[in-house]
Amino acid sequence: MKSIIGHCNSSIASLKLSEDLLDKNTLILGEEGAGKTNLASKIREFVIASGIPTLYMDFSDPAIDEVEARYKDEHFFYMQFEESDAFDAAFDEAVEARKHIYLAVNPSHFSNKRDVKSRLSQTISKQELLDNYYYFFHEIAQLGGFYTKFEDFLMYIFSMINMKKFGLTFLSQPHEIFENAQLKLLFTFLFLGRCSNANYYNTSELKNMKRNQFFYQRRMNHKTLLFNDIRSDVVTVDE
Image (cartoon, rainbow, N blue to C red; front, side, top):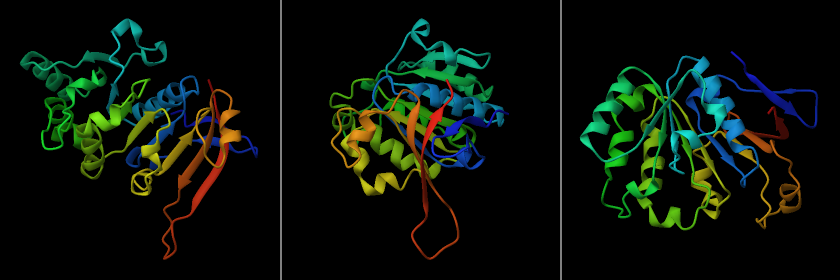
């Protein structure tokens, strides 16, 4: 199992994925070209090598020939979501076989009403998945009101976290919603890549981040009466 995926820029230490990642949640933020999918693919490889099936949801809804080659390994099992009984049957069969599913999804399948649970949410919240699968949520490239329009999407993800046995990785471009303190507490690992359009305390550093460079933070899980310790570093992920 390859657990070393890069190095820390301020020391000789390696950037190493640990077993904690398997049942904790990871947030990857950065603009297009920051190296998010390179990092996510390495996490996916680590999860697969750990014997856990994966459900990778790509909300750019790519055709199979549009999926990045890095994902098309011997485990790659492509499906495109549709609201049909035929899809449900094929999806259930893939889950039963513990396939590593790469699911292309048009986000319009999520409900835009808070009190309506979409068929998509029902599909990906099946108990068989919650009990056995590690999830990846790969956000669409252009946010364009996605978070405000599709409340079902956020409501589902954040309510689902406490129901899952394993963790999840969420990839997105930077968005003000991730400034929410309660939301941040849902994640143990944070990778923050290049962000040239943000105006935050470390904007100058974020704008100059090279591809595959990230501010990396890990929330420590020591027994303590104090607030949990957070370890930080700048890291470079191998291509």
